[in-house]
Structures are given as C-alpha cells and as structure tokens.
Length: 128
Image (cartoon, rainbow, N blue to C red; front, side, top):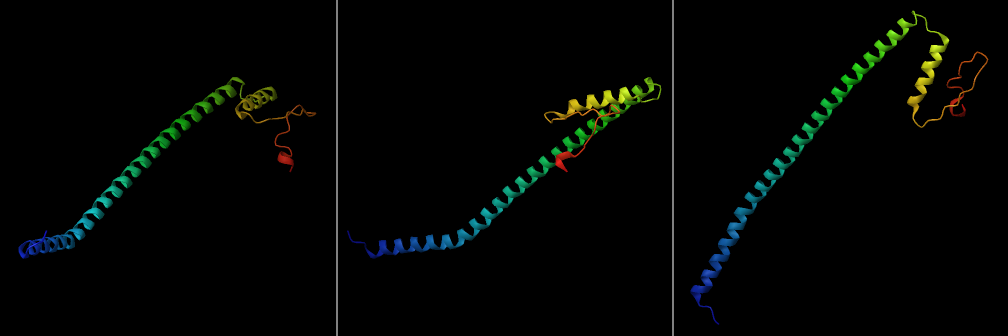
C-alpha cells in the first residue's frame, strides 16, 4: 500500500504536533510532579510534627502523674515518721531497706550481716 502525498503530509504534521506537544507538556508535567511531591513531603512532615507533639503531651502527663505519686509517697513517709514520734528507729530503717529490695526485680543482692547488724551497701561493687 502506497501513501499518497496528502496522507504523508498529514502523518508528518501529526507527528510534528505530537513532538511540539511533548516539548510543551513535559516541562509542565515536571513542575506539576515536583509540586505534588512537595505537597506529599509537607503532609508527611506535618504528620510527624503532630506525632511528636502528642508524644510530648503524653510525656508531660506521665511526669505530672509521677510527681503526684512522689508527693503521695513523701506524705506517707512523713506520716510514718510522725507515727514513730519523729524518731527513725534502727528497726524501721532496716524495714525500709528490706522493702526497697523488692523493687530490684531480678537483680541479686547479697546481705552480709556485720557486727552492728547493718547491711554493707555497695561494698566492692563489680569487683572494684
């Protein structure tokens, strides 16, 4: 099948229009693509900022609750001292030390009685 001049001219004209459209359209597409990429990065940064703010709020709330718990513990200790008539007896100090040992978890504490009956605390820790 042979193409006549009119068909050849039309095919070349369409190809030329397509090339011109690509030269014009590709830069606009690149700009649009970069804009969309920037918007996506901005949205991600905004989301990360919101997450950090929520984490900071949660940490602040936890610190406030820890402070309240510490205040209550101090009130309890003050009340216990008041019950002891303001005197910390040796037995009460031992009781507090033993009670503290429960908070150590899986750490091992070796109690070595001494002449005075008080524990040796932090003696030669880690072989120093």
